[in-house]
Image (cartoon, rainbow, N blue to C red; front, side, top):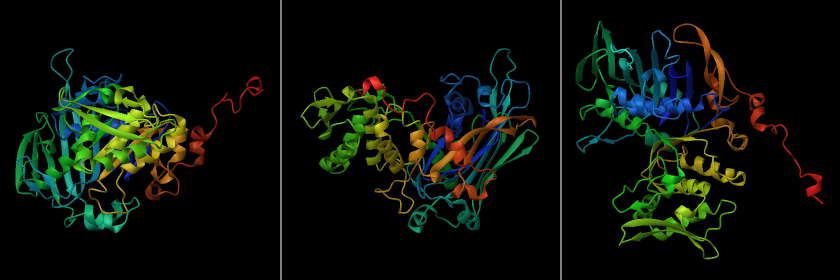
Length: 461
C-alpha cells in the first residue's frame, strides 16, 4: 500500500508530494499533469523488476506511445543541464512474501520508506539516446513512534493489527554511499555488494535475493502497483483454455477470470453477485451472468441473459457495461491485491450510472475498519478525473486537487509544476502548507457556459 509519494524532477512533477489512503481521487483540469502521477508510480513499479533502460521505455511517451529516449522522463530533459530525478515512497508491504525459490519470507518491518535518485549519461555516439544511471538508493523502516503518525488516513485497530508487523525499529535495509565512482551497497540483513556508479543497469531492489526478506517485500509491493486501462477490444477478446485466468490490466481474460473465481467458490452465488451488481446500471436489464466453457473449441464465453430471455455474449455488450463488468469481476477476486491506478473511470459510462461506478471503484479498495483477509483484500485504488459529477460523489477526505503552481526547479530556476493539494479540514490538510477550498472546486460544480437547463419552448408544446 502506497501511503506517501514524493517526486522531484520527473516530467512536470517538479516538486510534488501527496499522501494516499485506501481510496484517492485526484481531480484537476485536462493537461494539468494528473497522468504524470500515474507515470511516476508505474515507473517505480517497472524499476522494481526491470533494467533502468527497459523501465524507461515502458513509461508512456509524450504522444501516448512508449518512450524511446530517457530524457522524456526528466523535467526540461532536452535542455543542456544536469538531469536528475528523485523519488521517495512510504509503503506498507505484505507481512509475508514468497521468494524466488518458493519459500515464505517474512520482512523485519512492514512500514518502509524507499528513496531513489536517477541521473542521465549522454551517449558518446551522435544521435543516439543516452541512458539512465543510478545515483542513490535507500530503504529503511519507519520506527514505532513515527509509524503512528505516518498511517494518518481513517482506520481502526483490526486493520492496523493485520498490516503493521515487526518491531518497527526503523532499521536500514539498503543504502548507497558515493565514493568517487564507487557505490557501496549494504543492508542490515547480512548482505553487501559493490557497484560502479553509472554502470549499474538496474536498481538494487530489483535484484533482491532470498536472504533479504525486507528488500524482497519492498520489491514485491512495488511490483503490485499497476495501471488499470480497460480496453473494449481486450474485454471482447476470446479467452482460450490455455490463457491466464487472471484479469489483465487492459481487461483481457475477462471470461476466464470470472470462470476461475466462480469455480473457486460457489458458482451460482458468485455469478449472482456479479449480476446483482451489474443490475445497478440504469438501462441494463440483467437476469443472470455466466461463463460457458466450450470443450470442443476450448474457449470460454461470457454471457449476459436479459430479463426478457435474450442471451448476449460479452462482445455484444456496450463499452461502458463491459468496463463496469470487469470491475465487478475484480471485486469478486480475493487474489487481486496491491495498488490499482485508474484513469478517468467515468469514460464510457452514462451520466445516470456514475454514482454506481464511483461506489464500485471505492468498494474495490480495502476497508480500513476491518481486518485484511479473503473477504477484505489488501487493495488500494487511486483514480484521476476531470468530471464534475465524480468530484461531487467523492468525500473531501478522498480528494486531492491537481493544479499548476510556481515551484523551484532542480536547476534552481523558477518554473511551473504540479501540486497535489488536500482539501481544507481533511486528514491530509493537518500538516500541509497549502489546502484547497470550495472556491477551487467551482469549475467542477458550476454549470458549463451555454448549457441548456430546460428544453426549448418548441419542444415542450
